Amino acid sequence: IYRVVEQLPQVVESCVFGQNWENDVRIVLLVRLAAGVELTDALVADIKQRIRVACTPRHVPALVVAVDDLPRTRSNKLVELALADAVNGRPVRNAEALANPECIERIVANPLLRR
Image 1 (cartoon, rainbow, N blue to C red):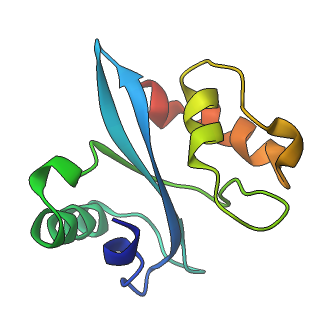
Image 2 (cartoon, one colour):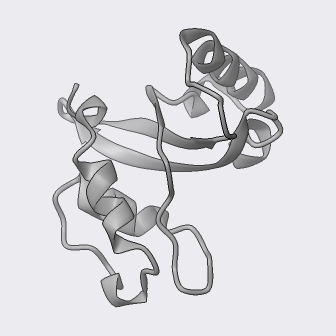
Image 3 (tube, rainbow, N blue to C red):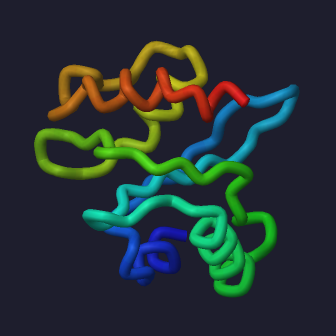
C-alpha cells in the first residue's frame, strides 16, 4: 500500500493500521501531504482506486485521514503497532522508543477516527 500511495506527488508519506470498529476491523490510512495540498474527496477517491488496482479490493482503506506528522521511533521508523495500540485503547508498546509521542495523541484525538 505504501508504495502505491507514496507514488502520488501529493503524498509525502503514509501509515496504515487496523482500527477496531463496529465488531470488525477497518483499515485506516493516514497520509502526510505535501505543503499546500488538501485531502479532497477527489484525492481520496484517487488513492482508493490506485490501491484497488495495484493491490486488491481488500487492501482499500475504509478511511483516509490527513495528518501533520506520523509517529516514529528515534531511528526514524514508522510505528504502526504503537499507533494501532493507541487508537484501539491498548497500552502503547515501546512508548519509550518514540521520538514524537505527542503525534500519537493528536491522531487518537482526531474526530474522524470516531465516525
